[in-house]
Length: 633
Ligand code: MSP
Image (cartoon, rainbow, N blue to C red; front, side):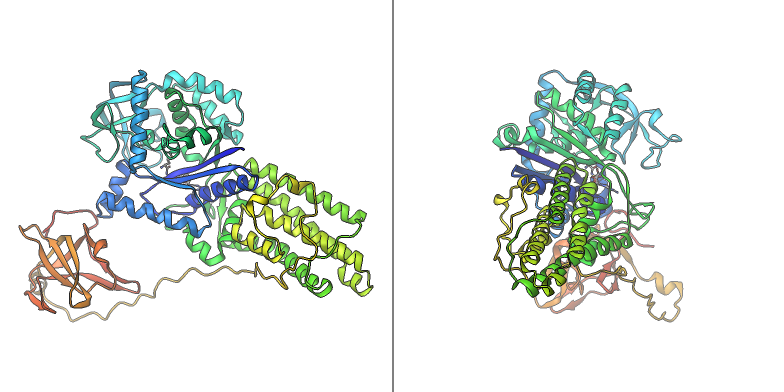
């Protein structure tokens, strides 16, 4: 029995899931499913990376308590994956106890073996990247990622003696070409190893950052996020004690994009060496998705939301497009037009037509059951040979992460089956009463379709199962013999009923993104003197408690810290848009000098300001946290 372990990066919780995250995770899911089809025992891991400055800053920006913030974003990842038919075996979060314990265990082990030392360091630090930069790495004196000048800091920190393992790592990469693939990234890493990489700073003083895992040997420091995050790959397997680690680690494959090559290709293997652990088996590095020709970024407002795409075009279309379009290792461009075009050409036309015409013919000519296969002619044997080749290529390419090539191989079979139908003209055979020949042709095609559908399971799981069901083939993962599929053509049982028709891939059109609401400015009110306006005392308060109003569904009792000794209660008509829990910790603007009044029996001391939108009420709040009670001027 072979064990196969595959992981995605664990994603930072400072942004909601987007196309890039979806791609890596779909790749991991597909390769996991491929190995399941091949009969391997599989463990597929994904998760979220939740410590460090970046996350604290994002929580502050969202005006949320850090723990609540990370819980919220982490669940948006966990909730998304099933919608994309992603079936991970575990979801690891770096804030989980089981992970923390494992990180501390590894740190202590490496410390005890003498590979962690304490030293003073002065350098240029980028808070965005959470790392020190050398002068050489800066572009015009600025961090190339964040375009800000790094800050010079001098501090004492713990260092991992990475330099001690770099030679051994270089040898390992040279002797194991499969360790880092595609080749261009292997070469990139070998080039990095020719530079003087030195040691790795692995701590952050608590005076600067507390949101992290304590060093077990000095609790004045927390662990550097990368040293913490990389260990997720083994903490999830229950290292050190668990049997899963012993079983799965030797077959471990990590999927990452090119942005995080260095930590995975250099930090992680040297950390494993220092901890006395075997290295992972393979690092598979893919390129970046751009949107059209443009980098995807929040500030450009072109971030592609995977759920929107799956809802607009279907999960199958989305997964198929991503896997077929990107040549693994290179960058690729995403547009909805390209997705639709590919869907219509490959799935609606080639595959969809093959299914609908063949099933219709099977009903018209063979009573809706898989016919008997007679003696094979030269033409049939050509189908079998092209088919077996295409499937063997598909399997070989898929296994090596060449997904676009794998799909292209499979489509050689799909297209050939369509041509074979045209050439054999079953309708003419029917007319001529050549039943045995007619049955043979339809059998050859139906079996080819079954093979295509089965091989598409890693790419589009539920549609593959639906196709197989239409062919009357009972889906049973344990019964699949993937290797056998490339040598025998007789999987379908004659006599099995098949579906009367098929419309699994109706043609698609680009769906226009929902238009922004037309601007509907409310009619302006009569002008007032400044004095009138200045009579209003507008202030900022922090929500410390929020409860449903006992007598009115629309109202909430919101208690605000307004800088005074006691919280101030405001009765707010916001219950339809806001759950009490989502208000906690939020800062809002309120009118502080409104005369108190009773609303359904509860005293309200002020009024919270909000904007009515089509999605409900948006609350007014400062762009960065301010002391409670601050005056709005
Ligand atoms: N938290 C670290 C990873 C730690 S792993 C021990 C991190 N997180 S991240 O949220 O920034 O995710 C980076 C990863 O997201 C990339 O390596 C890639 O898998 C995916 N992508 C993010 N943007 C992408 C594209 N535009 N295109 C393709 N994938 C990209 O780095």
